[in-house]
Length: 172
Image (cartoon, rainbow, N blue to C red; front, top):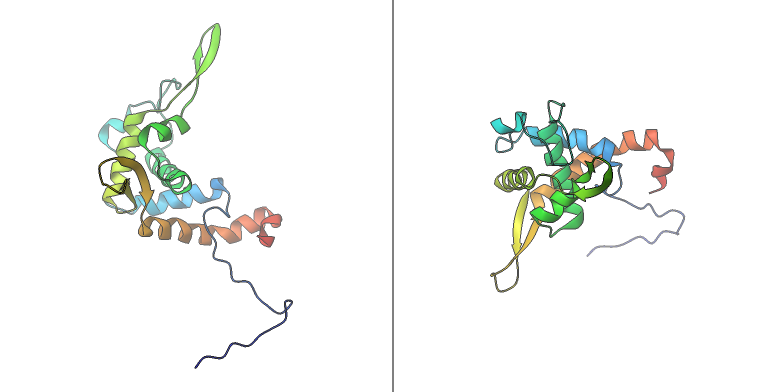
């Protein structure tokens, strides 16, 4: 038999597990990219050295670890917006295309990069495809429990740094 001691409202301590929603993205993504880099199935393809990330860009990325950062960003976007497909993800990584003297228009990012990243995350066991109840239509990608665990562990590690930079976060 288990006894539960009732305490007053003031004495109660709320235990809160930190999730990726609780920390800023600029602190979460670099550490998540380092963790993703440790997976064997996630690696930058050879063609990624010379490719632009979309038609709205003029040059390829200059960062050395841009593939890992993009993989971390895609994992975070899948966690927030799941189930989500390649087309919607590429639109999130798009931007305004400069058309000279004509007004700029919104263009999506590279679907090939997004698709390849999602396939690698799926091989790593962090993301899976979700189908409808009949199993005939693919609804998009969702996080697996392993992916959810990874992103929340990284958020828990980043939490003290986030509270130090933004003291207002400690009440959440």
